[in-house]
Length: 131
Image 1 (cartoon, one colour):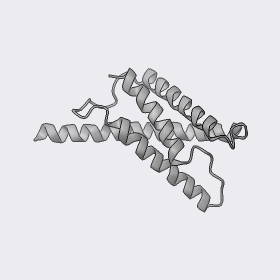
Image 2 (tube, helix red, strand yellow):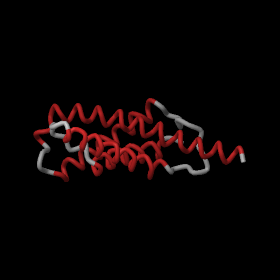
Image 3 (cartoon, one colour):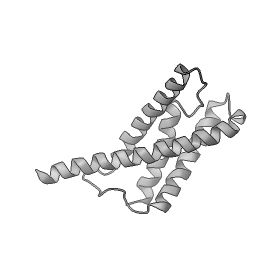
């Protein structure tokens, strides 16, 4: 029973730590996009491609800085490939809607789709490189 509980807690910790890293890196992406967003406005495919590349780059950087799993691997290895991008997408969509309520214009990455793409790119790279 203790082992099952520890596996569940390890799985949750893995998801939460990876999600926190993704949200922090998304905030960095938001700052970069604020500086040069005018080139990509109006082209969702180009924005999606750049967001995916940024997620892959963030995953590579994360794997370089932390070349080991952030938490002890559990029986549910790889669950973060599903849960982290969904949670990150929801958080980014919430951030975008909060900015709209405040009368500010959100950037493209502050949507569910682009937040999901970024987090999925990062999670896939970490899954492939860090074992």
